[in-house]
Structures are given as structure tokens and as C-alpha cells.
Length: 148
Length: 490
Image (tube, rainbow over all chains, first blue to last red; front, side):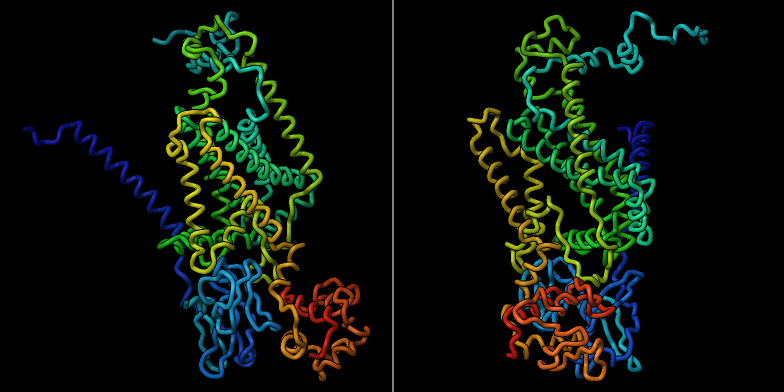
């Protein structure tokens, strides 16, 4: 049997490899460019003095993550760092609002409600409010990316 | 050896008509005759024109889209401003209105075309891939609508896209990746706008042209099902060879010019309708997109997504994935694979009771859910309805109203800083009112200055809280409910 590659076999092999290389090159370059960036969990931002955030009452604040503005609710705790909730509902990410009268967060889109600890108290939301990383440094509240 | 070509030889010889001259150049043989002069039944209905009218609506989108693109700037800083600039020039505004109504028309027409083809069973052998390419064209049309929605970069665009892309995150396993891929990050941002713009003006048009080319080629190959059924046995095969000696007389007319004239007529009607709609109902534009939603905007779904919006309310908690991912995927698969699922060869209505009943049930489902969804959707007019369902119906002053005033109003209206002469620390203070008189008219929330101020509808004072975020509608509604019940000190 002839085991040496024939001219035709070489051409077929070359065509397959060449086409594959082109596909991998353009596919890979596109994927690299369009791949979603990792969540900006490490980026910490000074949100102001602890005194600006009263205990037991969510205060709306702006977290600028990677150039885009994101709303957060800061809730100071009697001890330890404040709890910082992302202001997107965990159902379909509409903006939640804090109702002082009803003492709960509510989402106007599909009617989900959450208590001051972020737990679901009503509506279709499948999980508690997402939290941002937060800590207190030198009397100031620092907030980072999503931690849950 | 090159032959010297005389100027006369490239001219059209007198024995060739223009179509013949072109057919010779393009190597079309006799097929152009078949395409132009094939017999079409004289009796036809407006439903026969739906596919053509869909393509025409797309042509409207191409022309108006190209014009809009010359003025539009796909960036966070420029998008909304460029739409404002477009709207400031009447001719450009009109082009945007035409694009807006053309998009709606395309969704309507592609839907009606699909229903018609389903009703007459025209998706059956040998036209399975006409149906498949048509179903994919429907998907591309919805893709156009979804990506185009974001481009004006107003509140509706931003929040509808936030919700729409959030739905992708429910996909098992790769949900967050899909959402990130669509958005180019965690939230809807300039990266999302860039992606949606590119897909809207480049990727989808190329995809649509490829699919439409296949769709039309198949129409040419297989003919329209109703025409084929009406033609005498064996006529088509003979006709294909270029033999037109026995054109079926009486009930038939040639495609050119008779049917084409009807098509042109339908084109004129469609364009007239679009122009009338554009002239009387301009394309909407809300406030510029605000990722922080300071004005508490509540997004509404586009009308063709209302049924999904309503459907989602049926699947509480963790079952949401069924409504958000399961059912849309399943219906999409079913729609595309229909010719291979429905194996009943008959196209006669009497012989396909199950398919027609299932189709009718699906229609009743979609229309019914859309109707219920539209009457419950949150919008400028319906906001109060939803807000009232969120708000406490019988509020107490001590438990509900006082905490609200403390949290939102006392920064300016306390005993020490009685802005406008108003103090809202105690029940008596609140009822006394301020420099403009009482702010509460017990039993009449609409006539109470405090409600007008919170809603920003008062002629006397600016919107409250001054310089801050508008209160949630549920809080304003709570106050209204309390005033409507006589503003009791309970």
C-alpha cells in the first residue's frame, strides 16, 4: 500500500488546516474583543463619611463602576461595616425604591418587595437583593463591586 | 488573438428586447420569462400580498435607516443629543417617525404573513424551508425591534433593555455570560449601545438579506402554493421549458404587468398608511437615559412583548425560569420545526382540525395575554393603579405617614429649618400648613398642596423633595390614601 501522502491528500490536508486556522484566528479575535469583562469586584470607592448614612434607614448613593453609574442603598449597622444593596431588583433588574412609609424596598415592574435586610417579602423575585462589598476606613464608607 | 470589437456589437440588437438583452448578459436563459410571465389566478385576496408588503416595510426601514444613520451618534454622550437634534428638524423628525412606524408595521405584517401561511397550510411539502427561512426572518425582525429600541437612549430604551437583557441571565449555566455578552459589562452602558448599534445596522441587515434571498429563491423554485394548486396538471413543467403556447385563459393573468400592478397598488396603500401614522403620531422620546433612575421611571414592554410580560406573572419565584427561558425557547423551536412536526399532508382546512385548533388556541393565548398585559402594564397613565396596589390602603399617621415625613421631608421642614414656613414634625404642624396655607385638604388628595408638590404638578411650588429624587409612587399613594380617608390622627 502506498503510505506516502499523495499530492491530492496534501492539498486536502492543506485546505482543511488553512480554513481551520482562518476560522480560529477570526473567531478567537472576535471572542477576545467581545468577551464580557469580569465584574469589577476589586474596585473600591469612597462614598463619604459614615455619619452620612443613618442606621436603620437605607440611603441612596452612586457607585461608579468602570465608568458606568450604578445605584446602591447603604444601610449602616449598629456594629460592623454597613450593608450595601445593589438597586437592581433580582427579578429582572428594574430599579427598586425604598418606601419609608411601608418600610420596605419595592420594585415597580413586577411588584417584588424586600425588607431592610434585603430578603424577599413578596412578588416574583427569586433571591435576596445583591450586595456590594463594603468596609469602613478612617470613618468613611468604601464600596466595591458585587459580592453576592 | 483578440478580436476587434466594433461599437455596434455591444449595442442591443434590434431583435432583442431589453429583458432578453439582460437575460443573455446575466446567463438567465428562459427562466426570466418564467419569473415575469408566469400565470397567476385572477381571483386573489389582499392576504396574498402580505409577504410582499413585509418586504416593502423592510425597504422603508432601509431607506429611512440610512438617512437616520447619517445623523445618529452611537455613544452615551451623543445618542440622545443626536436624536434631539434630529427631532428639531421637521424633515429629519419625519424620517424618524417613518422608521418608527415602519418597524411596527414590519412586526405586524410578518406576523400576519405567518398566520396566513399557517392557515392555508402552505408550509407543507415541498415548501418546508420556505417556512423555516420565514420563521428565522421573524426572529431577525424581533432582533431588529429589540436592538433598535435601545438606540434613542431615553429612559424607556435604557430600562426596557435592562429588563430584556436580564432575561438572558436566567438561561441555565451560561446565563450571566449571555447577559454580559449582550451588555458588554455588568449593566447596560455605552458598551451595550455600541454592540446593539452594530448588530442593528450591520449584522441583522446582512442576515436578513441572506435569509430573504433564500426565501424568495424558494418562492421562485416552488411557486406560490395557491397558484400551483390552481394550475392545470403538468402545466408548470411544460412552462419551465419556455413553452408558453397554452397560457391558461380566463381565470389567469400574467404576473407582469397585471399582478405587479396590484403589488404596486398595495405598496402605495402601505406607504400612505405609514405617512399618515408618522404625520399624526410622532415617534416618542422620553427623558434621557438615567442609569440611576432618579425620576423613578417605570418601564413598559413594547406591545409585541406584552404577552410575555403578562406570562411572567404566572410563574412565581424560582419557576420564573419556565416563563423567561423555557416557554419562549420552546415556542421558538416549535415554530421553526412546524413543517416537520405537523406531518399531516393535507392542506384542506376540513382535514386539519387539530393544527387549526392549536393555532387558534395559540392566537387566543397571545392576544388575550397581550390585552391583560396592556391593561396592567405600568405606564404614565397606569402608574397610579400599580402604585396603589403597592401602597398601604389604610395608612396610619403614626406608623406610616410620620416615618415617611421624617425620612423625606424633615431635612428642610423641621422646627429649626421651617422652609416655606412649613413644619412637618407633628400632626398639628402638618395640618396647620405653611406660608401658602394648609398643605392638606382632608378627604381630597388631588386638591392637597403636599400631593401636588410631590407629584410636581403644583403651580405654586416646585417639585418636592427640593433637588432630590422624586418619592416612590407608592409613598405618594400612601399619603393620598391617608388624606382620602380624612387625614386622621391615628
